Amino acid sequence: MLRHLFTLIWNRKRANLLLISEIFFSFVVLFGVGAVLITSAKNFLAPHGFNYEQVWRLEVRAGQKLKMPRAELDDVLRQVKALPGVRTVALTSGNVPFIFNTNTSVFQYQGKKSPVTNYYAADDQYNEAMQLHLREGRWFAPADDGSNHRPVVISQDLRESLFGNGPALGKIFTWENPGKEAIKPEDQFQVMGVVEPVRMDSDFSAAIPSMWQRLLPYDTTHWETANVLVRVAPGSGGELQEQIARTVAGVTRQWTSQVRVMDDERLHRRRYTLVPVVGLCIMGLFLIINVALGLFGVLWHNISQRRAEIGLRRAMGATGAGIGWQFLGEMMVVTTFGVVLGGLLAAQFPLLNAFDLPAQPYLLAIAAAAGAVYLITALCAWQPSRLAAAIQPAVALRED
Image (cartoon, rainbow, N blue to C red):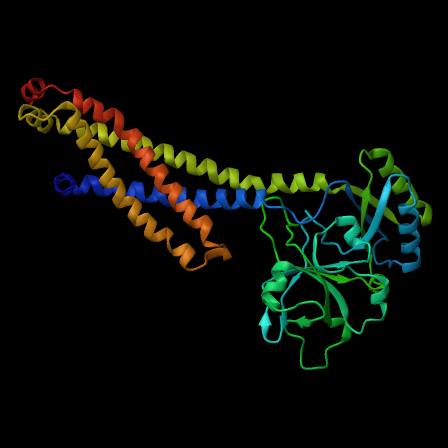
């Protein structure tokens, strides 16, 4: 039976070549959309690695070309922390979670290089505000003031890339290219702790290797803007935000402030990230609809052109169900050719480690695309196959 189907397909190779090309491109599009959706869904379901709820971002600006004396900044932090409803405050760099601001670099340890890593400045209260999940060691403390190296906390994925399965606590690493001159102590990073991987870019981003370096007092003397993380009590709202703004203004009238809710920034980033994904899905949907309509029309035309053949087969004893299954079988074989060609192309992505993604999303996308293509083909071939099965031999031969 299969050999007979191959013979029928070969006899109509020009028409079937067009069908194979349509199925091939449909598979490729479905594979691409599937890979994006599967990766996004996998990331969305993964934990963030920190607690963004009840955290606000206080942005304090000293003004253009004006610097921020640390004494005045510390006064602001003390007064904000003393407000009712404020649990803790922490000073950090400008690349806070869920905003379009990143600091990245590459680090090395004894010849091993890390992947591109997000690095943050953080004070001793940062972990209390963000509630990262410590796996090893501890967070920064005043006892680190006398350290000869820059205390840092790293994420588990950065730990694995630099130290493998070996111990990490107390180890010292540097920037990727520290230069030929003697490395300054502040550019030598000593690991104080290791935290779970974090996803601070968006709900749909993967975990990125991260490092938090201890913010020393002199680090803020050149700042024009300070970013403060404020963890507040549940139920806090606009009234507390106004109190924070008045508190900053009460320290110095030259400074301005703005309070943003981290969860609102997360939702804003989510909507921004969803736009291209939704657009890709809509484009893929329209393409699949066009391909499905094309397949349906081609099959309908094939039956009209092959009425005499169908009538002759019925006259020779073929049943209506057998004719219907024959047409459906032809389409499944043609679909297999298109799926195999598309699968060969899609298989290059996990083999080449494209976009630094693991193989699992690609393999799931290949399986999903193949299943969707077979389903679409079967649905498009079902009604034309029924029409072919209903053709009476006497009517078909008389018309011919």
